[in-house]
Image 1 (tube, rainbow, N blue to C red):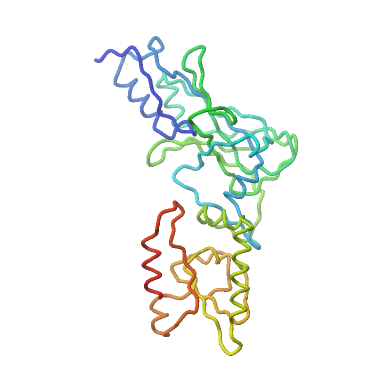
Image 2: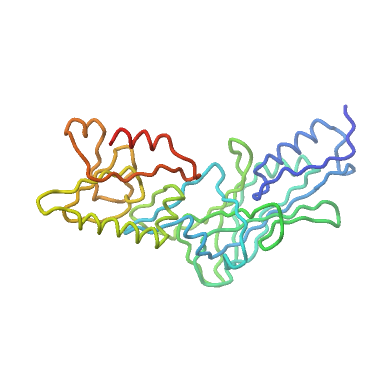
Length: 318
């Protein structure tokens, strides 16, 4: 058996567990049998904390209210976003909460962390709306030196942002129940945090790209959309109907009946809340010999790269 006196590792993301640190330390201890409390592991222990925050910035990135519904940004493989938060970006409205601690020298501690699940509560210190829980960790390198990515500190790690994905109104001195789990994803373990009470009653609750959610909260973009609609009314002839085809979701949350303008939407595009648009397939358009006066599309992905599919769709409909 290989003798190991020292293990040094830096396999952590801003959410602590997202780069397989639990699996790697478990493998090291299992394969190198002399790894124990007498061996030197750097870091040897980690603690994960969260705090409930009110943040207009986070709210606008993750939630938009449309008529009688709410639109939320899609949940990705990990249920948190990674972002460097500035102190002016948020206000803490709950106590800080220590969620869990893992000792990388102990198989029992590592395996217990892999199966962690708990119902806990956090005390609210102010009235307000919780938009997210912000998470960070401390790494104990030895008995003296520590590293942290807590908000406001200089660190190579971002903070983990857990959006609530529903309205959570609180009052000072409330005890807010939380359901906290560590789950195994496709790539690694990750932390999930869910507010364990029902605060929001909405007719519709749907999910869309974070780009669309951001646009709906952008007054400049929404004013641009309204100007486009006004322009359509101006160019509409009294003796004809302007036909508009939408290949983009950017218009599809608007409940806007424009006189003299018929909106059609590609049947492959989600209509979301809108009831003002007629869905149409390519086959139906060909059969009806439809011609459109205006086509609205998006040729750039959320990542900023060009979309080959967007160009192909535009080429067909033209």
